[in-house]
Image 1 (tube, rainbow, N blue to C red):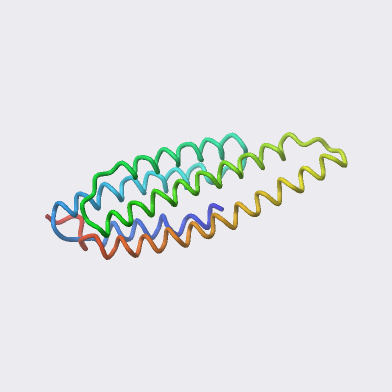
Image 2 (tube, one colour):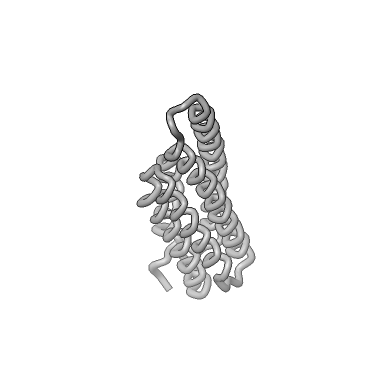
Length: 159
């Protein structure tokens, strides 16, 4: 999961370094990028730990980030589309991580019995399915980065 999510973090960092234009759009781009980067930072830090508690906590925090992205006041149509897309990606990722956290929790609590082995296999299957969802969400995030690059000015350091 972690290596699949590093690519959007790197791409977003590169986008931040290459964006320019008018100051109001610049400010809006910065607001959106800051919120998205908050989520990516959480993923980078907490996505390295594969246990139920950390995964569930990350899911909760990413849901909050998604709500924050949703609440940004942006005027540009393209930025609004990117905003809605990133909010949805973080909401969906939050749901997937919550499911993954439940799978980890089931695996952590499973006793070593024939029934426990069946439960563990179900938990592993659920975690694998969640991993596939993460891959799809990463691809969507990459598309959103491309949309933002078109919507934002090319240098964020100029007014």
